[in-house]
Image 1 (tube, rainbow, N blue to C red):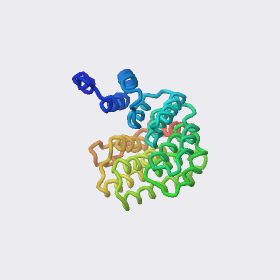
Image 2: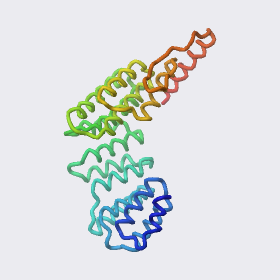
Image 3: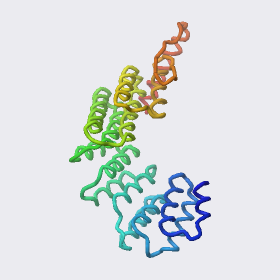
Image 4: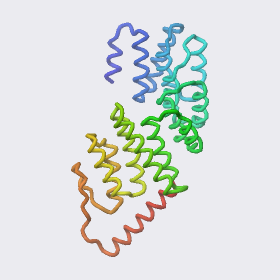
Length: 281
């Protein structure tokens, strides 16, 4: 609403403003407003659009075919797409069927892909369940990044249903390698927090309470603050293990009062159901 009000106050919206408006509306799910600004942009500046403007337009695409047409238009108009264009497409269409194959197609056109593009391609494979494509691509990298290791933690977490112990250890190994990158170089905290979240999520799925507690201590020792997503995941792990959750930020685990034989049987069945659902997932 604030963006819309600001838009109404601008007497003559130029190409830069329209480009930003399209992206902002699309990011916040205002599809109609994004489409409206996109139409104005295309009609007002049909032959003056730059790469930034086209990348903004790509945030409104809804199909892979539409994305291909926009990329073709960019090339023919003298504004060849860059890696930001490809990352934008892969994020915008991440739930589309066939995005994994399209991601490989886009990656094949880039000689020296950045961490952002590689991560986007790996995420596309993971999202569509094309797990057989993930390890070969990761192993082909000359250099790894926190984001790529985060995706590999998620990958091995999903693969645990095939071979639990091996993939469990591989996930922890990728976490450690990603953490080493964070401690040895300057990297955004948001990236390492997502890395922590990926391992917290795996521990939650496997009800690894002790591992979750140690991981939380490690996070705090680095001077990091748990995100709401990490706190929610930690709470699920604590309660799934049959303990109460303090909820005061200290994560002191307190045992429930003595329970009856019927309660124990109910808890046993709930754990079995949880394990069964995890195996099905």
